[in-house]
Length: 468
Image (tube, helix red, strand yellow):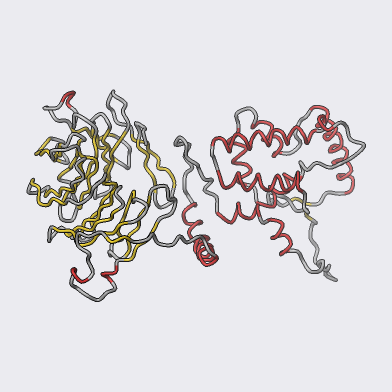
């Protein structure tokens, strides 16, 4: 999106990949087209200046650029690269320029094999790897289909009266669907070379995608946040004759499908499958420091961990024992231990040791109030977070259990006491101010979004609203 770099994403874990691809050209222009080879090992990038370069996805290294000796500066195209595509056998690479030139390149040798001119400025292309057909959309609202192997135009579809926004082939390559700003969605039969269906909607379609089995069509519309689903009635009519259900050249006006919100059934299904997939996706996933501008970054924590922060009071109420535990009559000999937050085994000290620790704690408390020095690791890291060590503090609180983090925040709770000093001199006010500065920084940077929002909600509930 108007940047000179391309980002790689891992769909298995829904995180950004290890490499950021940057073309080696000296002229830094935004990347306008990209594609991945059929084998999944190579990525092709086309820039606004006409440069096309191939990268290896595993290493992120460049594997050469494509240049036309007849073009100025030895670039692939004289103008903007509208689209790039490659065939199923890694033998051909196809690129389209804004000025209407379609070029076919040798995949490995990177030399130009052939080219042809559309006759008008190209704005979008679509390639079907199975049958080797390339569909192009130009400024004259005409869709042209080229046979890349035969190097000639085989189909020409006309009918749209405004800018074509998107198009896609069906899985078998027999249908071509296109949408336009004139509000129409048209279905073209590539084999019969004619339009077989057309519908008109009130809000123009901006993008569309047909499912592999051709039963459901997904569309997005202008100024609409939802994704609309359409059912292919030809799959359920039981008739094999296209003319029995197709409307031909006449566009039939239809209403958009009803918008569905997230109901309880959807939430239940998400919760049922989410716990199983989260552990699988998050284990062993490296956290990278790459930050895309104006993009919210999630914390990659299990959903149960940050949701437990929000519903911690409900969980405590649910897990509250009905009656206190009873001491057994004859307990075996054991060394008494005390519970710890870290889970380490700590033996219960003697009474004299407790008195010494109490005196040291009182002295440390007075020293903390006098010099604003934190007494716990949470407060120590919070103090250092003001010195640009925010990542260390964030990692620490993310590693804490929900109950441990709740206890740390409750230590900052404001307690009314007439014998205390003035509010601005109280140590908890200083750490509350540091914590608020930390929240402001993380929300402005859009880091760990859902986790930070859960911590903020818990903090406000404890320190300012109270348990009631």
